[in-house]
Picture (cartoon, rainbow, N blue to C red):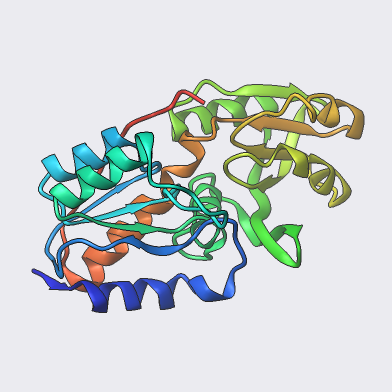
Length: 252
């Protein structure tokens, strides 16, 4: 199966509601390659290693969470120039979805994690400028904090950092992937038992203990593999496009 790049980009922009979500990332098609798309690769980041792996896999369309370009002007020099040259040499399209792929209610990073933890009564959580970044919900059966951390570790494959600032048993959880340590206060004020995010922050280190809530940090990278995978699976189901996930962990 194959389709026109313009058709695919239009569908993605609409499905992810890219234009409606304010973001520091330049979301959408960041680099134009082949006009016809027949194979998709997806990854969290857009490093040179990712670009080279996508080209080697035979993909002509790469979907990533963290792209090359953000809202500030960036000269195409140094490592960025190498990435651009590699994509051009491989005729590779680069499509980026940052916050739209965090907040999406079907294929987003946060809803995917919520479903993997079997959360019930799921609702939007974590306001940032009137945008809910994550989701919260109830566990079907309360778990000890250690058992919950073990479940999160199985899902992400990452050894979790646990801040046991709250009760030993957990029933309610809030989830925001990536670097959202600063949202511990919102989780506490919402009355949640535990907050799950990716990357810890030195500035926010004491927050869980001082707000009296548990926090689980499962890795920035590993908390954001779910969205690109779910989106690529959606493309396969909708358009028959084969896809491959490129696993290039940062360890952070």
